[in-house]
Length: 385
Image 1 (tube, one colour):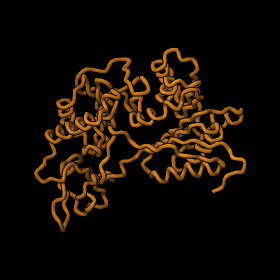
Image 2 (cartoon, rainbow, N blue to C red):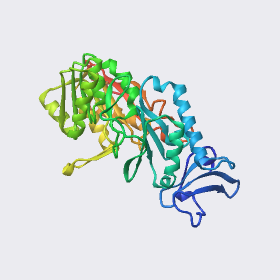
Image 3 (cartoon, rainbow, N blue to C red):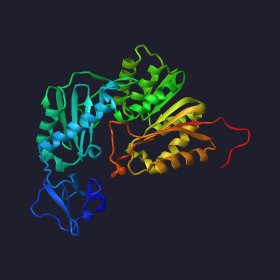
Image 4 (spheres, helix red, strand yellow):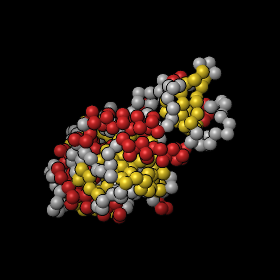
C-alpha cells in the first residue's frame, strides 16, 4: 500500500485482503492498511482487475459533486496556465488519473465536450459528473461516452460538419461518435514539430486514419502526400481534411490497403519517399490475414518503411501501446535499423503534450512515444556496431 499512500491511483484486486460486503460497483469505499490505518478513499469495482480507483488521500474529503467540480476547475486552470487554448480548440480538458479523476476523460471539440467513462463503475456517478462539468467548463453541449455508446446529455448537439484547428491543420471532428472522435489530440505537438520538415518532400502517411498528418503535410507544402489506411470511410475524411487545410492541393492520393502490403508494393516498384509516418494501432486484425501487435509487428514495420525511405529522409515512429516502455521502443527502432543495415538517427523523442498530464506517482500513464528519426546516407563501408 506504500504506492497508494504516495499517490498511485489504482488498487489492484489481488492486493485487497478484506473486500467490503454488500457494496455495489461504483460505491465509494475507504482503503485502509492493517498497520497504518486509513490511506484514502476511492470508487469500488469488485469484478475488475483494478478493484479501487483512488480519488483522495484526505479523510475529510468526500467523493461527491463538490469534489468533481473542484477537480474540473483545477484541470481547466492548468490548461489555461499552459496556454493550450491559444494553440488549438481541440484538446483534452481532463486526463483521468493525470488530473486526479481516475477513469474520467474530457475532450474539447470547439464549443462541445465529450466525457468518456473508462470504467462501468463510474456510471452510477455519471449524472453528477455531467452536472459538475457543465457548471465548471463553458460549452454548448456535452456528450457522454460509455460502453453502451455515446449520447448527448447536456445542451445542444454539435454542428455538422464540425471543424477544429491545430497549429498545423484544420480538421473535422466527431464528438458524438461512439468510439473515436476523428482526431488524436495527443499527437498535436508532434505534428507541429515535424510539419516544417515536410515542405518539398514526398510524404507517406501509413495508418492514416482521418488524415490529420496528411493535412499538416499538405499545408506545410509537401510535394506529394499519400494516405494509406484499411478504412475507406477514414480515407474519405482524410480527403476532406487535406482540402480544409490546403485548399486546392492537388497531389494528395489515398490508398485503401494494408500498410505492410503497401510497403511491399512500393519496394517492388522502386517507389521511395522522403518522409514516412507510422502510427499503427496497438492491436488490429485484417480478416483471415492475421493480426498485428506492437510487440511482434513493430520491428518488421519499421524495417519495411526503411526500405522505401530516402537517405536523410524523415521517419516518424509512434505508438500509444502502454505495454511498451520508452527504452523498449528505442530498442525496436534500433533493432529494425540494424537488421536493414541502416544508420538510423533519432532526432527527437516526444511524449504527451501538456493537456495530457501525468502524475509522478503513476508513470504508467506516460503511454505515448513518438520518435522523429532519419537515416544517414549509406557509407562506403557498411557500418557495424
